[in-house]
Image 1 (cartoon, each protein chain N blue to C red):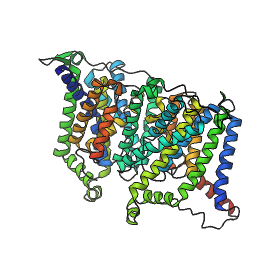
Image 2: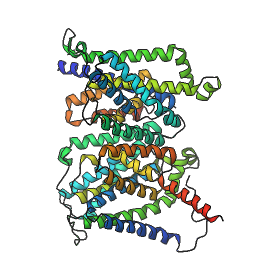
Image 3: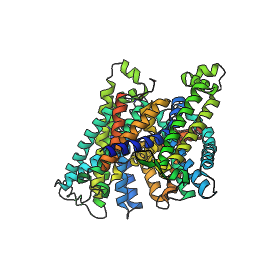
Image 4: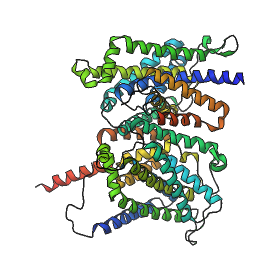
Length: 334
Length: 289
């Protein structure tokens, strides 16, 4: 599918390893600075945006790179957020340790749901993923001593980062912290999807049977990727809990899973940049439009989805890229 | 104790029958066209809006309103079938189908809210169905009995249609081997379109009949979006007895859970789903694909 081997064509400039490191830092850094300049009053929104972006990146790992159809990914995100909230209330204040708690609980949730979901294909797989999401949602509502029920879990007050930078009410620290986490995760994931493990997952997605025939242990690989994806979603959930100080039932809900999938497909599944841009564009758009009327927003998203499926099934990113290439080719001709 | 068991049983059966009446359309559609149609609940909701409007604004009587609802929903869904659904029959991947049908659902929810507003729309039932009914040993709402009768009638009518008519023969041929059916001169596209209309009509019918248990409002389509899909998956796509068994079983799981441990919400419903799908990935009575 994505047969663009950058190593084949000789390129001038810095070596690939440096580029892999520098490009995400520069691009996400610039985007972050732009966000800071455009929404200086609304950094809380941008930090939220970053948490959800991590969820979309995590979803991309299983949907885009493994071809698993899931509508229950928010369960991982939400469980990690609840775990972080509880850890913080229990007295664990260090934000980095809280991130680790989120990642770890995400890992566990990812492995468990991966073990259930990736056993099957097609409809059973989809239904199992939905059922897990709904199960977690119903439990979160029930176990109100751990989750605060429908009121949400509140009173999460993390300490200072490195004991120096405290979280302020304007979310400045939170924003920079989240941005840094996003950059680090993005770089790690860039390496991961280009690794032999990442390539094998893509092979499984494109042709499950052939992957089996060349001796790949398909099921364990998919579970492993689900685990990695769980860590990323868990870090997203942790950031959400740390920055907002509240975890609500919407963190685990079906709507959150569906929305993340929409963002992913909008940008283009199977590419980390696609997931990143899909999440950013969707949420910025939502921030502006849904403030006016949430139901008109729903109609718009629906129309957008239908249009994408019909006219740009690979997502907006690849569609724009191919249009751009065609334009350049046309321009190069005399 | 005895009383609780009876109450649970009666509620489970009527809830299961509503689930069945709405889901069976989706089941047939998924068995034949292999479309994971998340918008099925939205079509049921459109049926409910039609019936509510027909009774309250136009003053039609209940049976006539049901006919209006079914036909109206089919008319509204026909252009969607021609423009959108035809592209995703059989061939397309699950993700494409999901996204397209979620998109359709979102648009329908947005428009429903724009046209009818966010409030719940009631569908007044005639006096004949609204009172209690004496079973001899206890009283139950007559409407529950009506719902059960509707479910059973639907099942029987569909069985006759599929097993005993010429259309049914063609439909089964198209399910078993679409290409071969086409080669034998069966116009599969016509069969698909008719099946789509039947599926949507059944959904609308179920939406109207079940409105007492599942109230009609814009978020209906989203709230029950996955419920119907789950029923079909548990029963096995395309199987009428499967859908019936799954509806009753899941109706029982849900009702029992809500009676005995109401604070758990839909926990038991989805726990049952996970167990059944894990053990029978093709559904209780579905065939291997």
